[in-house]
Length: 407
Image (cartoon, rainbow, N blue to C red; front, top):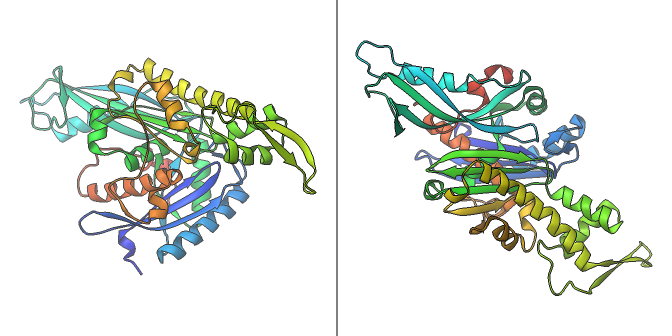
């Protein structure tokens, strides 16, 4: 058995699967993945719960599998959230330094951060995570720690991620119904970027895209900090739906065709090729044109990338992604997806792999587990910073404590 105080668990309740990853943090802060549990997700649509009974049943199965593999009892989790209601934007807070000597104190920093978060959100929304970017002291930019500096005006830029409070509360309550404590709530896109990107890539500028079953999350880094984030309520399931509609086949058959014959870019081999679809008796029902199948898939996947590219362009960040694009999520397994993304973004595109962690290769090498691994990494970073003030990301528990009910 492992020391429970060093155990960190990350939970993603996705549209296609429920996944819980267990990590152990040693005395030096190094993280080792020791357990993985997953179950097919039956009660989630577009990243949000639509059948609590089914989700709770599947969640308990995933927890049991993870505990068996890791040989630990999981008591708490860092919970990843997604959904089309989640938004991210940048905001600036301003605070006058009123002390007689004009020396900036930690209280001044706390006040300017509080001002940056005092934004006009819709009444039903709450902050999920906020990420400090840069401080400004009397107009001097690029300040990372203003404490001890002299100035009359302190400002801070902050990236704020928020979502609908009740819809977030639904998933928190469900997790707590399994007797687990929620340590913190994290936007899946933030967690994924923590799993995939090195510090150098964050400095160069990188775009992380996580293509799930019902949603696609994306986060853009530049100069080492998050500059932009977003969610599209579109994912791999929509590709299957398009195929079912376009090919006039049942959804289950469309999913199978996608996995066996699908590609993001129509191939020469697919031209003129047909597939015979048979019933349970082996009798032919119809023939499917492979080129048509691949064209349907390509159009949907290209649309997803184009929407993200347009969003990045509007944010003025396209030219700052010098490390390129990193793809993950179960939807990133589609053949030909990398060259399609390169055509849309006109930059280098790489399949993402978890970095700065060790342990189970069954989890580390699979793109669909990136978010859950990132949640464990988030927890390890929070453990390291408990004795100091956390500065990389702050989640719901620190920002909006009433969203997390006490046990």
